[in-house]
Length: 560
Figure 1 (tube, rainbow, N blue to C red):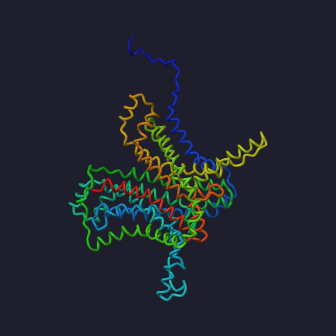
Figure 2 (cartoon, rainbow, N blue to C red):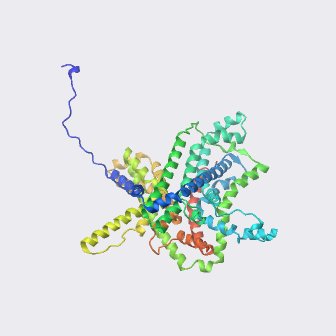
Figure 3 (cartoon, rainbow, N blue to C red):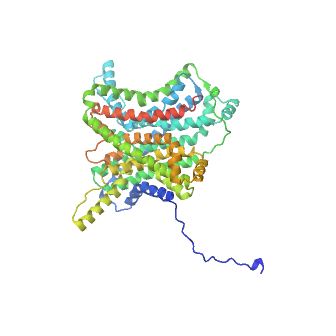
């Protein structure tokens, strides 16, 4: 028989289905759980359109779209200008105070935008100290005698968001500038480029991926905000979802509105990915050296110092000082039993969420380390999508399936045993913590994954040679080495939960307010003095991870 006559024979052996490993099942189960609110929102959008939804589309939906687009464009330009300019100055230029400013420029990230909205409104309103002083100095009698910008407006919201969110761009762009090759910048100088031209033609194009990523993060936080836009009476998707859910009592319309908001996020993420894909620049290795900085003196040094100091003063120091003054004036009534009860509620929610987020992140990151298949990798990425979704959308996505589950259980118990179980999960701490996990799991996952990548795979091989199972390797080998990463992940989630507002407003149990909720309620009632103590507590807690992040960025590069 020749080779040409040979025919392939079909194997009669049955194809066996390979049982997935335990870690693969764990990763996919967590991913499915974290994705369930998003899927619930999407499924609800295909339901029957109610009269409320038709009313929304005919009246306020165009306004939500317009305001959201204007906010995104304005905040995008604001954070891009502030973040990129300050990153360039502290990285590439030498002027007095640069070493302090390179980490201090991250501090405004600790202040939620809604805190700035309350303090600046109190400072700049008609009866506030600024306008009162102006009327006294110039002899003005009423508002018709002069013009003063209205802080409670769309422009005011853009300004405040820019002041607290520019650190996202600053942090990533500064790292990009630090990693740019020295020879590339020296080549631009040898071709006669001055510092300004080198920035525009060389450094800025190389930093485009970092700029796109930082701006996308800032815009996601802008779309997530509720306290600022609600206080400034700027209708956006977040305020619309809240009013439709609690004001009109229509969950289906709120879900459909959430789907439109979700479309904005999808478009934003897609544009960011496309921007980074089209901006691939390659350069020779080499770190930026301190000796190559542009020396600034005189007016230029003063201008650089002013540009870097102004965002810190306006974004943190001034509102923080105003809140401290208000707290000291009302200290006897501010630190009462109610304050400590609110603090206890916030600590319980933040602590439990941080603990669970770290545990789930370890499972996801370690499962991805053990199983390199695409399915597991996609599952890990899917589990981290919640950070890009506004809290109000997540709240709707959590409440819809929980409400359906509670109603199904209650109906079954009534029919079988004549007993009403009521609401088992809706409006409970469990439902609220689940929403926090969906929203902030990506924060913990990033820190844990970064810590795992620093552990060499040879340690896994050595542990297996000693007879350790994967779980034993995690607990006995990796866990001790991940102490710093786990602590960082817990702190980041803790602080994010402490200041979270949109999801907490919708899902929180009855009579279970938090510090953030009380600040919002007092400020909405124009009782800012009573809101100052909870606001200061949120601000001080928020400073912890920012200081930690500033130290981790500046300390390894202390010689830079």
